[in-house]
Length: 207
Image (cartoon, rainbow, N blue to C red; front, top):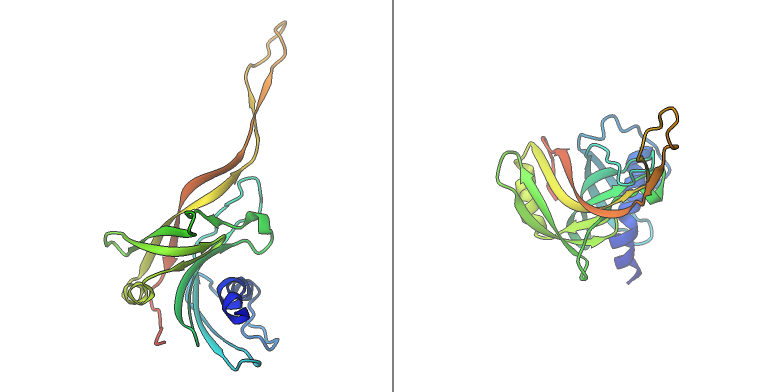
């Protein structure tokens, strides 16, 4: 049971940290990631269980999920193969500020619809299991099949976007007039569509 929750919830966070820091394995060796918008391949070996996880990851452009923050989130598409099978999932973590992570919108069953457009084809709907900033895509084999022949993937998903309070000026003072007044428009969390674009050309995935 521990292994199941580790792989489903904690492993994606560790993998994203590996991309940001350039960590290439769990043995303390570091490598420089030259271009995160190209496919990056890595292998993680668990010395305790002897399991091996094969990964392919690519980033989209950064997005501000917390409008009042200077720290963006970095949406990442990951393919993973381990002893439990093959998974494809999206993450939207901010490495510098957890409050700036992107949170996928989901229903009461933690399910969401992810729209995926491969090159110039008509967008396809994929169901995804959502846990905060993590969305695991169902129909994995078909998704990867489409991915292998596409040069570009565009994903449209709904996120919780945090907006700060805003101060608006309601009148401009002139000589002898009453002072200007300001109104504070309360911010909060709103659900908006965001587009994630991935350069998926030259994917090598034989797992």
